[in-house]
Amino acid sequence: MKEQIEAWVSRCQKLIDNYQKETFPTLIRPILVIMWGKKYARIVRQEAENGKVFHRSAWAFVNIENGDIFKPASWKAPAKHARGNIKDEKQGMGLMGAYGPAYLK
Image 1 (cartoon, rainbow, N blue to C red):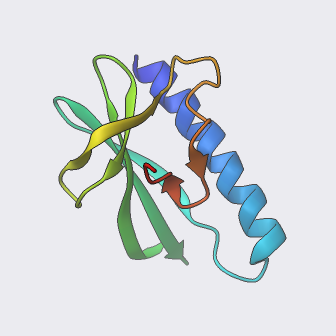
Image 2: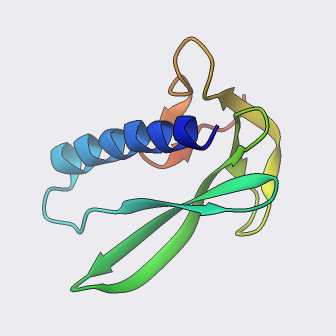
């Protein structure tokens, strides 16, 4: 499952890179980093310049057991309802945007 999560994060990073290049080409490009926990992988969006990280925020959570993708409720916890799964037909990218998983409607 770790390899699948890493591949999904790589696809999300490409989404962010393309969005950033088209919309905000002069801003610092954010990087997604995986922080592994017991039940969830926290995907952190961080901005760094000259090797110094100056902003970090929880971008998404992924359930390590089944691949469900969650929007963050806080730095430590995911929201209640899954926004997709990394093993679905769209490989988890159906409700993903440059700022993370979409809100439920």
